[in-house]
Length: 453
Ligand code: B12
Ligand code: SF4
Image 1 (cartoon, rainbow, N blue to C red):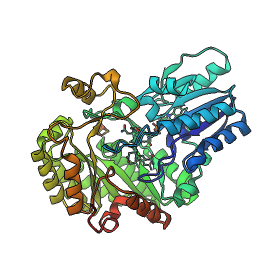
Image 2: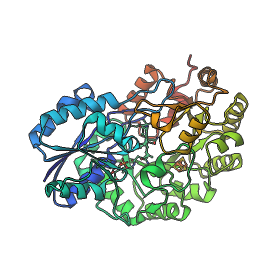
Image 3: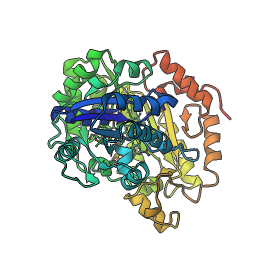
């Protein structure tokens, strides 16, 4: 069959991200013998619907798979929803080839499957991993079997399917616009933090990829195409420890000409781990710290305490790996006192930058959603719609934004994406165009060198 996979994401902040999920399902469909094209809307701006429609009309596919990565930018109190843009794009594609079956998938879709299916009038949707299920669905459509509208997704087990079809992505354009390689070394997370969707999206058990296969993919799909920077998109890179060390060892052995970044949990971020990462080419890590007070860490069900945050920061300094703390301020249990302690402890660890989100996005099926209902902050889990809802601790709800502005004025390396103005966004874009490839937060001190109002 002729299959068109459309990557609908157009977000450019904090950088444009390669449509890895779309590339995985495209590869699986191609491997199963289908004729596959991938249309990426990332850089199409306002022309996205007409360009996607043109791509669909010229290929006349039997099936159109739309990959929906983001629903919104999670930036309370000014969060932007992407749903209307996706709706226009899907409407245009559908209008161009009304006979094609429309299948939705992707992380954003998987968080609100029924709502997206109804809103976009799609024929089918795959929740979670798509490789195996998309191919089964294509087979069923080919046989005119009448498959169910909503399917629960799966990937090859063990994770040894075909590599993502990066050859269908304009890698040079991403490199030019400040994007980088994206690679996964495993899927899943067994930690169970209160707000997190990752165990829902990828499963609550870790499934590892062979480190040698990961390194082959980095070489063939990316380095051979001139890419010099990568983001390891694992939910958490450093857990399980043995796998992370094996990946680092494989990268170090091959002496890859590649610098990379990853999400790291303070839990188990030892000097040995950071040293192995550094030797493998790691140029910076985003510590998933969230908060630095025992009450808020407990409210978020984080599997580490303040001691581990301090130790992990020390390990980064020892290994010479620049780091930023990723925080969520205003979560369950937050008061002005816990917030003050978080700022004090985080500052004492001397990070290169701090990226702080305000409030915590509430997703259905998470312990946080149930807590918000119990506390009367949310009518019911079923009331969660495509418009983003946030948990903001009642004790700081009225003061949080003002407090964040004060912190930003005093500490220029603290980045609050929700408070960044157009000027900061333009500066980011210009740094990217001038070839700056390191994670943009490493520039925070210079980029935001003067206090903001
Ligand atoms: C790594 C990551 C990042 C990195 C990306 C680095 C890079 N260069 O790629 C960084 C830090 C930059 C980032 C930024 C953002 N991110 Co992010 N990110 C992730 C993370 C952890 C992994 C994404 C990934 O690459 N996964 C690997 C691929 C292979 O998986 P996948 O895309 O889900 O694809 C699979 C399935 O979805 C399915 N599938 C995909 N497409 C299709 C299509 C069809 C037809 C079918 C059938 C199936 C299918 O099959 C695929 C293979 O199994 C996810 C969480 C998660 N675990 O998914 C969040 C996640 C995608 N991010 C999210 C968000 C919100 C953002 C930001 C908007 C946040 C912000 N304000 O900065 C930005 C947006 C960036 C952008 N330009 O789009 C949200 C999206 C949900 C939402 N609320 O909209 C997620 C889900 C996290 C969450 N909160 O739950 N992110
Ligand atoms: S926040 Fe990180 S460590 Fe916690 S469950 Fe999610 S992915 Fe795992």
